Length: 290
Ligand SMILES: [Zn+2]
Image (cartoon, rainbow, N blue to C red; front, side):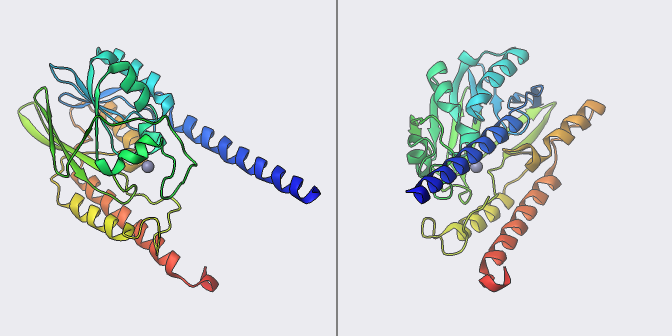
C-alpha cells in the first residue's frame, strides 16, 4: 500500500512537471511581436515563435494556422493593428494538427464562421483534438475542430483572387501540409513557400509500428520541397526561417526584403535532412553504443 501511494505520488509529480513545462514552453513561444507585411497582401500575424499568416483579399481573408489557443487574442490584436478584422476571415487553412499550430482553430472557426479546409489525413487528429498522436499520444491536447472540406494533394485553393496550393509533406505528422502561393509586389512575382515542419522531436524513426513509413515520408517530403520554386521562405517556427533576424534586418534597411531567401530555404531543407539522418543513425546504434 505504501509502495502504491509512493508510486502514485511520483506519477502525480511527473505529470505536474510535464504540464508545467508544457505551459512554460507555450508562454515562451507566445510572446507578442509586431505584425508585419511579408510581401504584397501576405502578412505575419503570429506570435514570437509560432507562425500565423494572413492573406488578404477583397472578398475576405485567409488565415494559415492559429498558433496556440493563447495566440488567438494576439492574432486578433495583430489584425486590428494592420487595419483588418478577425470577422473578415473567410477561409482557415492549417499546416498540421499539433497544439501549437491549430490550438486556436476551434475558437477562430466559431468566431469567424470561416470554412476550414484540411488534408483529409489530418482530419481524425483534428477531431480528436490532438489526442492519439502517433508520437505524443495524448500529451498535447487542443480544442477539437472539424474541417469543413478535404483538400487533395497539389490542390489549388482559390479565393478572392488568391491561389494557394496544398502540398502534402508528411513526416512530422501524417497529414502535414506545405503551402505555396505566388504574390506580385512592385511589378515582381514572388514564389512563396510556407514550409511544413521537418523536425522529429523525440520520434521513433526506426521500426515505428504506429508510423511504419515515417522515414520514407520525410525523405519524399524533403525531395518534394526541394523541387518547389522558392523566393520567399516562411515556416512554422521562428527558428526555422530566421524570423527575428529578418525582422531586425528589415528594420535596419527597409529597401531589401530579407524574407526573399531562396538560399535559406535550401539550407533549412539540408539541415532538416541532416538532423533526421543523425537521429536515424543514433537509433540504429546497438544499445551498448548509445
Ligand atoms: Zn508540430
